[in-house]
Structures are given as C-alpha cells and as structure tokens.
Image (cartoon, rainbow, N blue to C red; front, side):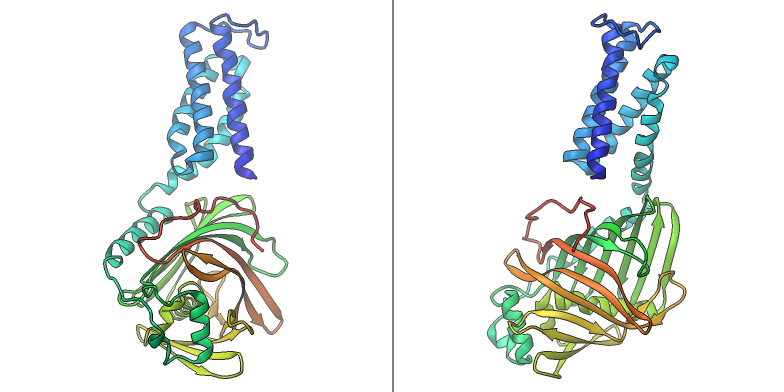
Length: 384
C-alpha cells in the first residue's frame, strides 16, 4: 500500500516536470509558470521528469537499487525548481518526501548499518557452509527416533533428501510489544547454518509509529546479540549476555523443529515421548542445554512448540522467564519440503498471554541448489 502511494507520488511529480519542458520549448502556453524558461533549463526539467519516472519503475521492479536514479532525480528536480522558484517552490515538498526514504536507504548502505552487517555475515555464512554435503536421509536414519517424530519427518519430506546444512528464508508478519499495542508490519530475512559451525542470522525491517526500524539477531558460536535501530541510526535495543545466549538457543531449536526438520537427526537433540501426541526435546549447543515440548496433531504435523527456557526482554536490559509458545499451522511445500507456513509467538504470563508475533513464510530454501520460487517479501500487509 505505502509503496504504491510512493510510486504514484513519483509518477505525478515526474509528469509535472514536463510542464517546464513544454514551456521552455514553446509546446504549450502555461500561465502557471510565469517566469521564462530557456531551452537549456527546459532540458533540465525534461531530465528530471525522466529520472523521476525511472525511479518509480525501480521502486516497482528493482527496489534494491531504486536509490541510484532517485539521487539523480532529486538533484535535477531541485535545480529545476530553484531556477523557477516563485512558480515551482511547492515542488520542494515532494522532494523532501522523496529525500526521507532516500536518506534512510543511503544510511543502510553504510558498512556499519545493520543491513550491511547482516548481508556481509549472510554471504560469509553461506560461502563457508554450502561446500559441505551430506548423504540423503533414509528410513534407517529415522528408526531411533520416537514414532511421533518419525511421522513428522516423513510428512516434512526429508526422506531421500540431504540433511539440511543451510537455510535461507524470507517472511512477513506483524509484531507488538504489549497486548494493547498496535501491530507493527514487518518483513524479514534469515540465513542459518546447522551442524558444525552453526549460526543464525535474522534480519527484520518494520514500521513503528510511522517511523522505519530494523533489527538484527546474530547468533554465532556461543554468543547471541539483538540490536534494533530507528531510521537505521538510533539504537533502541542492544541485547547480549548469558540469558540472551540461552534464549537464542531455544529459538535455534525452534528453527530446527519448524523450518529444518531433518536437523532433528543430529545427536545434539534427544527426545522423550511424554504422551499420545507429545514429545519432550532437549538440545545442547556450545555447552548450553535447552528443552521444549512438541505437540503433534492426529495427522502427525507439529502444531505447537513450547519451552520454559527462554527469556522475554523488550529493552535488552531486563529479562523475565516465561513459557514461550509458538502455535503452527497452514502447512505448505517449499522446494519439496513441507513445513508450517504460518505461526504465532506468545508468552504465557501470569497476568495473561502476550501474543507478540505473527509470521508467514514467503520462501524457505534448504540448500544452495534451491533458487527462489518467489520474490523476497515486500508487502507490509499483516500476516494471519
């Protein structure tokens, strides 16, 4: 929605510049433009119009590089407006509107930005991990597991495919900090490496109170960090330490269970059947042991993951341990593997549950040979 409005603004703003071009070359009488415009300056108006329209096309079809024509368009437009200031000064308002997202995008290009750090880490992680191959999963591999987990892995489509070594994911969703807070739309990406040298790199873009923010969860070795910045510049959260490390280990186990079920064959994960449709899982990583209760439906799909080993922290300074639950549903096939495409995240607090996240998977790739089936998520529509 917002992207469509922005594209519309660029198109209209670009077309308005054609008025200066038409007046300068005498193609039309335009009483709105009282000051004379030379043919040379009319050429600037034309170039500004073209640059605005090209920027609109880049926003629509090549958003990663929209800033390149936007810089040219902004400079040309403001030069043209300045030369006819008394007639065209209101056009500066449109340029200021263009300048705000452009400045944020340019800030993201800094090596120290969360975006740049995530992209660097993700490239490095995939480059070092994708060269390691594994044999396809067999029925014999499943035999030591509890029957519930065996059925789940079969339904997930892991038999006959290599164990997941790398994972790349795009998603969209909504987040909030408290029960009465507004939901904030987000889109995000994740790269994970499983087995030796495991790591989890999770990046999210969103909007809060009309302002953009981004967040980066980085879990490498034993150490986990979470940073959140407003407009790519101002740090809102900087979380790290032992409790953060333990919490992220629980999240890593959740990813293994939900997004990359074949990784549950790793000896670092052990299971105990606790009921007709429940299993208790324990996972040890870098000396940190965490556990979770897995609930399966009658068909054998995982429908809930719950752990008492994760801590809630809104500011990265205070941590409170609550039971963490992620209900799962809407199973879908991605590249031959079947996983839950939608899920929620909530804290079971004494004063009442806090559902704080709703996510929808856009694409999930488990291996270097799997190309995107769809473009990366761009819509900020709520996921439900």
